[in-house]
Amino acid sequence: MRRTKPHIISLVGARPQFIKLAALTGALSKKTDHVIIHAGQHYDRVMSEVFFDELAIPEVALNLAVGSGSHANMTAHIMMRFERLLLEKCPDLVLVYGDTNTTVAGALTAAKLNIPVGHIEAGLRSFRRDMPEEINRVMTDHLSSLLFCPTPVSVKNLREEGIGKGVVRSGDLMYELIDNHRGRIAKAVTLLKRHGVRRHEYLLLTLHRAGNVDDEKRLAKIVDILARLPYQIIFPLHPRTRKNLNRFGLRKSLEQHSHVHLIEPLSYLDNLRLIAAASAVLTDSGGMQKESVFLGTPCLTLRDETEWPETLKRGNQLVGLSERKIKSRLSSLKRTGRVMPFKIRNLTPSNIITDSIMRFLKG
Ligand code: UD1
Image (tube, rainbow, N blue to C red; front, side):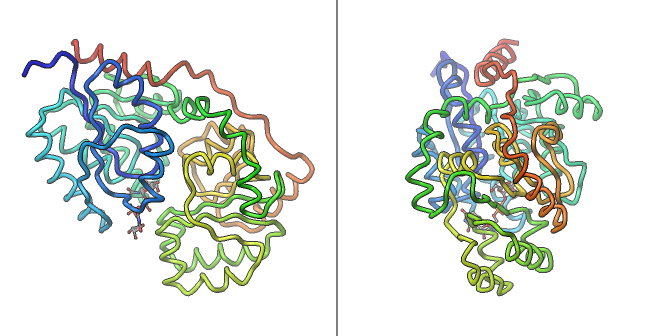
């Protein structure tokens, strides 16, 4: 059968990828025959389906159902299953997103079959090779024919690694998605009531980085600090964090503190609503750092480095696991309050990406 539109396959598998996909799929589906494949890296309803439902992402054509496992196990299984699919479907281009095991597995499989790869959120670097995400980013960028960079810094990072061809400064899909939903994000009254907190009188905390939550000492230290913070704290538990709190026997001690509210992972919109209404966000996530400053909420990043250095001048601060830094920032926020929402000149990344793909495929 002769195709009238180019055939694009998006491979996604983990929560932050569904979000970027949600921003892109409308524009992409108008001009291409766009098919979504789910690797199955995230599989709990609250980590996956919820995002497809809430953001009206088109249905997944196939779920590779890889599930959890070691890095090699997960990557290898995605590759074997994805290769079978690519051999059958022969797409014109494969799109991968972000920096997870799904990303690198998809890029490597396609590149070995000589299928061009487009990388959404290319060029980010933490410059720490002990983070699995950093290895995934570097590998994926070096395998990609089209590299969609959200920021000038990401373009520069690629240039410094000798990558210039195929680089497109596309702007930030996550910012575009926030813009598309501002009206819905503002409606938080019921949600705040449900969690028993008041606007600008609580902290929102998320943790999931292996470096923080797989290490018993570091996780215990975080629990210790939380116990002493004079704030209501809403803490949605990523499955990895929940598992480790239980495994290290730390969950009980956290539950003894009535100011810490352990809750299920949040949907995309509820997460943004709780970010927007918080006094501050504490996180080790990359996406949450951006979302906080985009919404004018101060962010304390529980790491020593960030892939988003531009957020540091806009209300984000690296505090590592230093109780002193955390407390001093929180008390200065009592005086200074919120930060100016970080507004970026973001044309429409979804259109820029789609048009670049069309141009690339026309040769
Ligand atoms: C992955 C990505 C990380 C991204 C994050 C977003 C890698 C190396 N890491 O980390 O870059 O920021 O997603 O959340 O790809 N689990 C469940 N249910 C699920 C998913 C996971 O119970 O639906 C549990 C399993 O015990 C699993 C653990 O969480 O072993 C970790 O999941 P995994 O996909 O390996 O990494 P994340 O920590 O989610």
